[in-house]
Length: 249
Image (tube, rainbow, N blue to C red; front, side, top):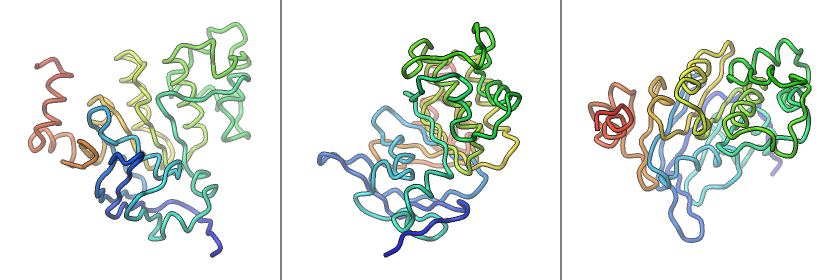
């Protein structure tokens, strides 16, 4: 069967999706629907399977059972390139090229002007680059060896935002940021000037609280879903995370 390309990502559906690796169950019977232009968040303890959600959409890994649909067609019916071409993915351990900051940012959009590059660096709070001797022409070395963990995350985020993707997947990308930087980056992500469906995978409430829907995962299962306000009332686990992180516990 000839694989398809598609024009845009309108909707994503997980239908009874399970994923296991080395006989270990990572996700179990996941059912969810993601609508275009909305923000979705996944929160849970380490090892709850939340990072696998984004990796399954990107086809980095494949489902063990069930189906994932994009625009009502099985994800396996599309070419992997046509899927990934519409998506920007930022992991907590981003990969950077041994090249200039400019070329790292415009990798997904070679038509960017310097002003546009600086705009996306500012959105990602990566404008620390202007303090470097050669600014955006600074060569950062193999995998950004000259940068700190937080600086790498912000530069990788700038590259993702500059691509202007239809789907933006952020996998715990603020783990190395201080509170003020995380607050500003989260605000900028929530107010992008272009339409973009967002999937935010995180362990901190501050990163997910403004999402249209938040999924709470535990041991590979979705145990609760709703808005921040709803989950504070209906999810014991979410409320406990919130109380711990806000200093109430």
